[in-house]
Amino acid sequence: MALERVMHVEDDESIRAVAEIALTDVAGFTLLSCDSGQSALAQAEAFSPQLILLDVMMPQMDGLQALAALRQIPALAKTPVVFMTAKIQQAEKQRYLDAGAVGIIEKPFEPMELGETLNRFYQQCQPT
Image (cartoon, rainbow, N blue to C red; front, side, top):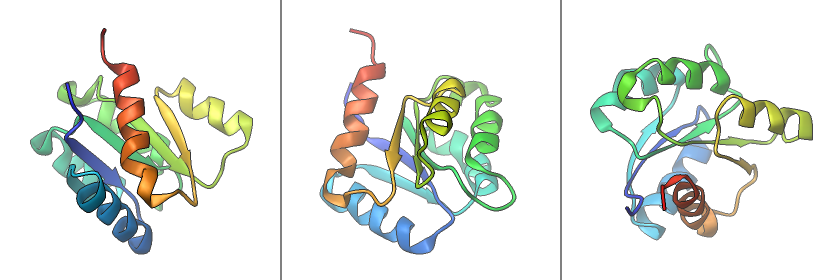
């Protein structure tokens, strides 16, 4: 199954704008862009994303808290999550993977490769 619907959760407006262009115009995905974990929780189930791209460091609800809350929604319990972060020490990386992430993208990211990278993570999660 091809990746088509991506939800991106990022509090930084400029990063959201770059990712939106990369994911819609370049990669051709249908995108739901959210500026907070709370916004993502309110909209995620109705959007039904195939993959969630989640910032780690956000105010009020960080990425790990948002992931835990999203996992409480039955329809999203198994939706692949990729974290995007500038905080990429090995111990941190392992923490994100242990929390259930299927991948981690380091900031700053390469916009022209973002869709391809997400597609690769998504395909790795699909049963063969």
